[in-house]
Length: 593
Image (tube, rainbow, N blue to C red; front, side):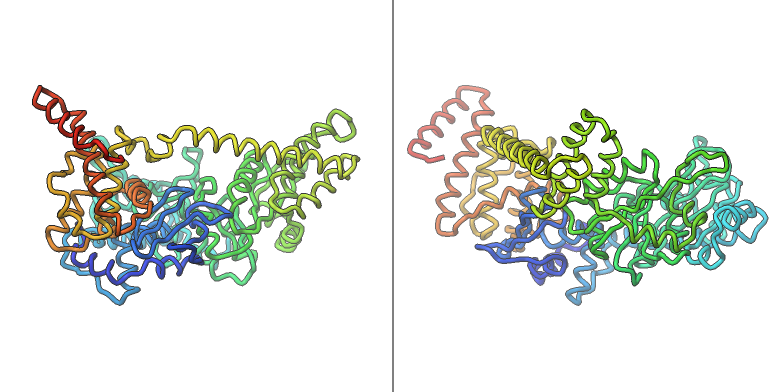
C-alpha cells in the first residue's frame, strides 16, 4: 500500500464514523443504527445508514457503502491518500513520509499543481507580449472585460507556436513528462511533444483552496474545437467542478446563479453578481448538486434562451427536483436585431446590451421551477382552440401531479384552470387520476422485483454478479461473523478462499484472515484502499444483515457447510469426488441451510 498499514489501523482505530458523517449531515438514531438523507443521491426519506459497532455506512437507495475513509473520499471527491490525510489532520496525526508510493503520489500532485500555476503565469504574461495581442484585444474589445477582472480570473493567452509553453516551462525545470501529466502538452507520433493550447484565450480553473487544477480555453480562429479543457486527471474532474466557485462561495448574496459559459461567469461577476458559477461544458451532475448544496440554499438557473438552453434547463430541474435546493429559473429575453430578427442571447450578451440593473430586474422576476415548467408547456399549445386546450391540460396535469406538496398542487392547478378556462376541480381531478396511476405503477414495479428474489440478492454491478447465489449468501454470512470477532477464524479450518464462488468475497475473506493471523485488527475499515469503490459498495451491502453474537457459532458452521457443499458440486472429476460429495450430503441431513 502507499500508506503504511499500521498507520491506517491506528487512524481507523481513532475514528468514529458517526462523528465523521455527522460533520456533513444530520443523523438520527433508530434501532441499532443512525439514519439520514443520503449525500450521494437525492431522496426525501432517509435510506442512508451508519452502523457504529461495525464502523460502516451503507445507502439502501444508491448502494454506496464503506468506512469513514470511503465516505470522505466520496463526499469531498478526494483520492484515497487525500481522504486519509484529511482525516489524519482531524485526529491530530501526521501521515508518515517514509512511504515510497505515497510520497511519489504526493510529489507528482504537488508538481502538477506548481506547473499549472507557472503555466497560468506564462499565459498571463503573454497578454503583454505581441504574440498575445489578439487575445488581449479580444478580452478588452469583444468581451469588454476590465483589467481588474481579467487579473482576478487570471485570463491569459496561448501563443500560436507549437512549443512556446514547453520552452518556457523547460527553463523552469519541468520536462515533457511533467507537461503531459498536467495535460498541458500532447505526445506526437514521432515521439516528440507539442503544446496542447495554441492561439487561445486561456482561463485557469481554480478550486476552493486556490490551486490551479486545470484550464479551459477558447480558440481565436475558426479551428476546432472551439472550447478545450484540461483532460480528466486525478485533480481535474469536470463532473465535480464549478467554475467561479472559489469566489462565489464568499458572496454575500443569498443564492447562486448557474450559467452555461465561463465568460458568462466573469461578465456577471464584473457586473456585481459575484454569486455566479458554471459547469465545465457539461450538463449538471449529481456531484455538482452536492457541491452547490454545501454553499447555498437557492439556485437560479440562467441558461441560454435557445432550444438547447431550454432542454438543459428542463434536465437540470429534473435533477434538482429531489435536492434540498430551492430552484428558480431566469429566462433571458431574445434580442431584436437591427433587421428586426429575434436572436438568442446569453447572460454575457444581456449584461452588455441592457446592463446590470436590467439583469437584477430579471432576477427579481425569476420563476420557480414549477412556474417555469408550466410556462414552457403552455407555450407549446394554442389555447384559443378547444383541442389544444385539452392537450395542454393533460400535459400541465403531468407537471402538477409531480409536485410534492398538496398546497402547491392546489395553487398550480388553479393557474392551469385559469389559463385554459376550465374549473380548478376538473384539473385537480385529472391530477389525482395521474397520481393514482403513478402509485399503481410504482407498486407494480416493486411487486415484479419481489417476484425475482435472485435479483435482489445479486450485486448491482454486472462484473460482480454471483455465479452461485446460495454459496455467495453463505460466504456473505462468513464475513459477517468474522467481522464480529476475528477469533471465529479458528472455527474455519478447511475453508479457503478457493472454496468461495465469489472472487470478491473470497478476496475479502483472505485479506481478513491474513490480518487475523498477523495479530492485526479484523474490521471492515481494514478493507479500505484494497478494493474498488464498486467492490466496497457490494461488501458493505453484504454485511448489512444483523448477526447476533450468541448464534454466530452455529451460523458459521452452517455457512461453512453450504460453501463446501456448493463447491464440491462444481468440482467433480472422478468417482472419489462423487463419494466425497455423498458424504457431505449425508452430513447435511438435518441442516437448515
